[in-house]
Image 1 (tube, rainbow, N blue to C red):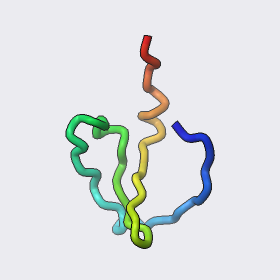
Image 2 (image 1 turned 135 degrees about the vertical axis):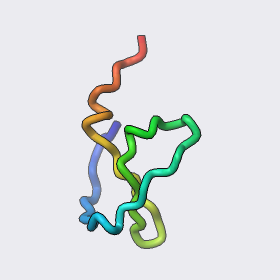
Image 3 (image 1 turned 45 degrees about the horizontal axis):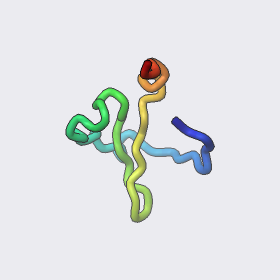
Image 4 (image 1 turned 30 degrees about the vertical axis):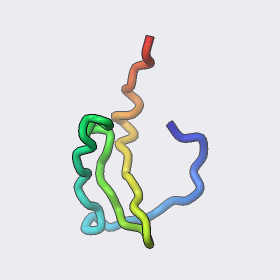
Length: 57
């Protein structure tokens, strides 16, 4: 999922917005929320849920 980490961000709970529905493209349980950073938005991933993904056969 990730090849490298370039930045580590600290966010207060009140800065984290609920993740929107991605229309079935991304299952909701993989995303913990969104945080505005400067002019952009950072997606907070649920690492524990991502570790349970089974490879396609």
